[in-house]
Every structure is written in C-alpha cells, then in structure tokens.
Image (tube, rainbow, N blue to C red):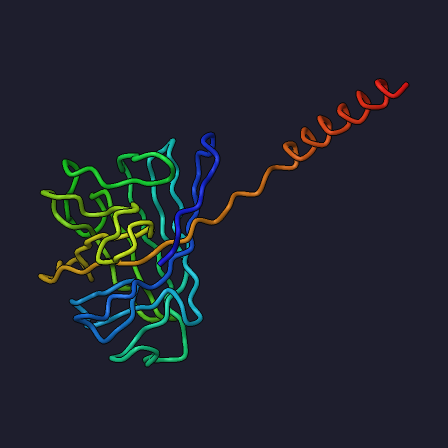
Length: 212
C-alpha cells in the first residue's frame, strides 16, 4: 500500500512506479498483471521495474518496463529472465492530480490495433503475447485512490481489464492489471533552480542594503 504524494498543479506528465497488488485472499500469486488466457502471472517487483506515465494534456497513458513471471506461491518464479511489457491507452478521462480513468464510450476490441488500449508482453526472442482491451460497457482502466480491495483508502491503486490477442485471434478470457503505484517526484528543471537562486540573491542584497 502506497500513500498518495503531491505533485505540482502545473505538471502535465505524471510518472508512477508500479508495485504488486497484495491480493492473496483468493490467489496464491503476488502479481501486477494476470493473464488468464495464458495461465500467467507477472510481478512488477522481484527484479522487475515498470513505469506508468500519464500525460494530462494528451490524455494518454503508457506502461513500460519489465516483469518477472510468477508460479503458484509468493516468490516462486518460473524463469530467471524478465518479460518486457508495453501497453498504451488513449482518450482517458482526467480525474485531476495525476488520476484518470478510461472513457466507457470508446471501448472496442479488434486485435489490439483499433481500441483505446493495446500492447504486448514478451520473453526474450519468443513471440509476443498481445494485449487488447475490454469491450465497452464499463470503465476498463483506472488509476485512483479508491482503495480497491485494500483497507487503506489512501492507497493509489491501478486496475484495468484487458482482452488478449495472439496472432489475430481473440481469446475468451478476461485478464487484468492490478497494482499499487508510487508517484515519482518530478525534479525541478534547471531553469527553476536558477530562478530560485536569483530570488535568494535578491533577498541577500536587500538585507545588505538595510544594514548599510
């Protein structure tokens, strides 16, 4: 569970480090992505590192990084290598402060190429497993402090349903991203530091004049 951190109101881009969701009441896996169609679970931790980027000007979201495949049981991994994950979403609805949700009227699934959400996961040089998007009818992706399945209502939780496509064929299973997220503070640009230094210098000069 991760507490919400603040960010500048002027910021147009927010970045979050993705962490596994501690949902173990019904599952023996710790995971950030579950793909039922391929019977696979993936961890954003344990050597993995994935970043979610949200732009509140273009209303686009991307998830990029690497994950470790899990077997049944926390900390029991299938292979020593990492999987690449690339997933993008467009036309999301801005909730303010770096939070967002999908628009319910734009959902479609057609091989991962024409919907709002599409991407893939891949292990090494093997063929990628494509991820599409849930059909319209409900919010299919959301990042919010909704406390989803967590008692702590201050937790930033991401959830999203995806339909996988592979070699042009849609599977019948529905699968999900389910993770907690930690806001990555945006460093002040160099120009900002120079501006602050300038203000500081003016303050020093003013005090010196008063003493004189």
